[in-house]
Length: 358
Image (cartoon, rainbow, N blue to C red; front, top):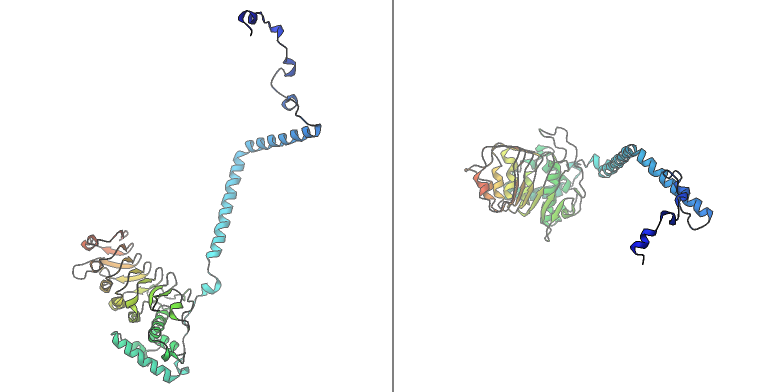
């Protein structure tokens, strides 16, 4: 071990001079002054070449970083535009879908008159039981939706042998099809045909028609025709099978209902749990139609973007007050006025309320 005295005896000249191995200023030829790597000259050449390329690339990126950043943004935007275009093409309906499904009528003169007479007689009896006006079935009424549906049904010579419930369901759906397909109203002067109508107005079982859901008894409990270009108004014939309905979805169509009797079919919707009719042209001058109060089992009611006006609820004709099970209420963007009705505060199950833009 070297003691302090020995350490003091060390002189600079005793230290080996390595200065010759380093350039006097900086490292102008750093590659050449580096210690040689193990291997032959070809390996060295490859190493130097690859290192030079990396260095050159880094310098290029550094000197042009803003240009590269702009180019990157442009590439990202182009990718987004292409992705949106592909998605739009996938979402765009085919030419057949865009054309829709216009209603087809049948000349009663070409039908078996005995079959027609028997079927009409059975319908008149059904109308009487449900207190419906039979006038639309009269021969002098022209091409009413009811007569169009009746004539279509009678193109099947065995129509009177069809099971009773299925026969009524097919007829009522037929009336719905003709009453809301290319039927003009105040807000749709030249409406397009239904967008889709898979199995509608065919001999397929009514439970297999597009948007129709049945229970295990083959009775219709739900109809979903959202965004399907329905116009006109809902026919009163829905009352014939309406007591089984649990869900109706006619969102984003062109339905226009304004007369007091226009809403009479809702009186039979006593089992209804979900009614979705936002984004149509439903009108009533005194809040919600009083016929809605018969839907005592209703849980979800969506009526935004319609034409309802006036006070939402009055003591004389309580509507919301007759819906104790209501959990979801939307009446955005209508013309409702007045104060918040006390009935809403009494809805113990209500968890969602949306009423802005009134």
